[in-house]
Length: 240
Length: 242
Ligand SMILES: Nc1ncnc2c1ncn2[C@@H]1O[C@H](COP(=O)(O)OP(=O)(O)O)[C@@H](O)[C@H]1O
Ligand SMILES: [Mg+2]
Image 1 (cartoon, rainbow over the protein chains, first blue to last red):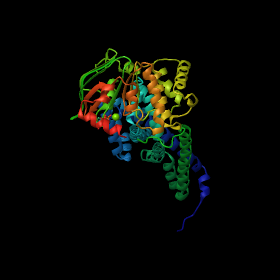
Image 2 (image 1 turned 90 degrees about the horizontal axis):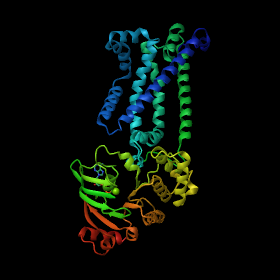
Image 3 (image 1 turned 60 degrees about the vertical axis):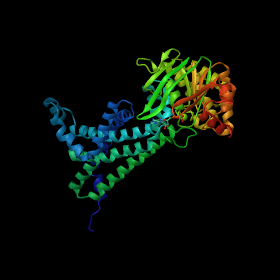
Image 4 (image 1 turned 30 degrees about the vertical axis):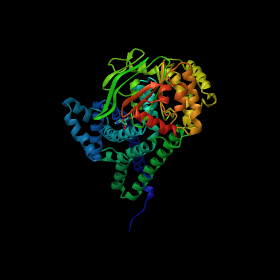
């Protein structure tokens, strides 16, 4: 192979800046999307554990839709189709009115998609709690909201820290799909650098290292959280 | 105090409770026994509305449990319940377990709840375990905490669902002792158990269930001396021979 390695080019103006801002956008998209995914996913997941058939039905439909349509298709649907479905003024606002429409589209798309995965984790976490545990909470007179707030959610979330970690990492990886609608995140910038300099190996190597760095940081962080919330004397939670 | 009148319950086609009726007076201790799957747990869960039922009526202290519009949470807070597997909240300390209902349901302040919890822990002999988590306690200790948690709500009656059947034999008595003491103080109790020694000592009445029906209901002495039904005789001879 006759490849001219040139790592130095990445330090040149403006490529270093591109790499830097690309990494910034990746983190920003992922974190904003995660806020949506975690909030919405928790609500949908809880809905799927309620007695109320309508709430459960809505939850199920949501999860099935967002989990089964390929993410890339969802990205295009949000970007191209969704604004057309809105009333004219609104559609115009979504396309032109808000600053950074590509960024927000990517955030909403990744957020709502990941919410379906989070919802499934939340549902299984709560489902792993013995029925009499819930009964014990109800029996002391707690309201349904209190039962979730003080017993089911604190225990359920502890059970699902490991799978939630991998969903959180998934958002970072999937954020690269933002490039298809023009978000200049890490992968998009690496591609752009390749086009300008023909030093694609270097650019993508650095991108890979940055993605790994994120993974490592997130894993460390989640391990800290897991350690902090660990219940004394308990080896594993959620055994039926 | 607790009146169960012609209660029937189905899971789809399956008849779990078949026309059950009984009465528990204030201060009475009623022991419910019978083979596994006979509907004992389901019956006592109907009393505090944990399980709905399709037919009949249950009243507790004059309040009808199944009726629409009844504040079930308020009623439940006045009926203590103890489960086979303790069901302490694993992420809370012993003290927090006992205080939760007091602060969130009864509206006691933290210091009030703390004092009351410590008093109850003293009563079940576990003051020194107050800051531990349930998983750090033995089964017998956990069940005593669960009893303290129920008592913290100042219940007018207590329901027990096989409170000792998940325990190692050497821990059964420490739990039964607490229950005997409660009974002697005049607590109204419905106890699902196969501990016939306990029944003999404190029960006013024994109910024998089979296949969703109350097959036999007799005062304790009668039940042990000459059970009327064949199924009860069979059952008694089986568990007493152990
Ligand atoms: N949620 C449920 N759905 C269907 N059947 C149930 C359910 N809960 C209990 N049962 C059945 O009802 C019967 C009575 O159960 P239970 O009251 O727990 O019996 P016991 O406490 O006397 O062992 C059992 O046959 C059990 O399988
Ligand atoms: Mg049972």
